[in-house]
Image (cartoon, rainbow, N blue to C red; front, side, top):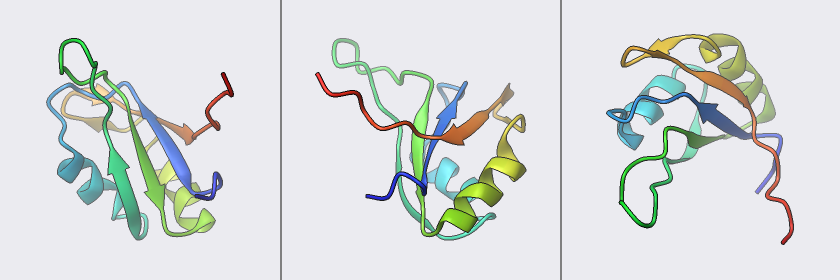
Length: 87
């Protein structure tokens, strides 16, 4: 996976589905994958997600288009995802 194409999407409404997120981000370019992590203990969504775009250009366009944009009543914060820290 290329870290230049994976986006972190914060401040997501708990109502937003992976399908809805994919439909929104597809407006900026081809979406490779979408994931919205859930809490292992409760099974509830954690309020953020990851969207992997086909190209770096599409990822940059998505940040421009959707950072600060409201989805399901909450303003998303969209940025490049940081690699997971090694444990």
